[in-house]
Image (tube, rainbow, N blue to C red):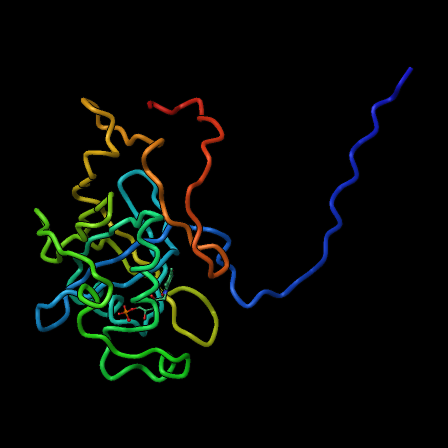
Amino acid sequence: MNTPTAAPRPERIAIAPSILYFGTPVVLIVTRNPDGSANITPMSSAWALGQRVVLGLLASGQGAANLRREGDCTLNIASAALWPQVERIAAVTGAAPVPAEKAAMGFRHAADKFALGGFAPVPSDLVAPPCIADCPLQFEARLAACHPAGAGPAEILTFELDVLRVHAHREIVIPGTQHIDTARWDPLFYVFRHYFGQARDLGRTWRAEA
Ligand SMILES: Cc1cc2nc3c(=O)[nH]c(=O)nc-3n(C[C@H](O)[C@H](O)[C@H](O)COP(=O)(O)O)c2cc1C
């Protein structure tokens, strides 16, 4: 009689990576600057539960300051095809002067990230900041809470946002339903500072409606 033998477990080593970006979708936050112009903050420390989205942002950024001051924003979920445009605005900040901690990292100032990234604004229905027309999923959102987070050299904030309205490109919506067509929606992921796309569909959960 053969007794089943357990497969050997992969060897494990302790490491100290400089960042822990294990793979999260890229979100482009649009906020309003004090002069009424719009700023885009690319980020990936975001998660959703129910109608609430939670974001993790460095406090020194222009988007964080705008969000604390005005409370309204749009969350534009980038598709994989947009990664070159995201990268065009990756090394800049809307903050002027550039905060010392960002300047030390090599960030420059850019007043108009829509122009720099080749993005088109489209008006929102319920909040002042515009959405980004190029993103297949666009959420209009309002600040519910802001908390200090993280112990480290840089101040980090978590923002809890209520999503007020969702816009989607028609081509990623299953006709006649409220559901996203996951065969057509190709989100952009940030994985240890690399851009990834074209995630394979491995199967559905028991609660999937489409
Ligand atoms: C793909 C990508 C993901 C990023 N994720 C985050 C993030 O989760 N949180 C954060 O504070 N900054 C993140 N950043 C860095 C910000 O985009 C950067 O600090 C930028 O200067 C913010 O712009 P702002 O100062 O105009 O708001 C990310 C950048 C890129 C390109």
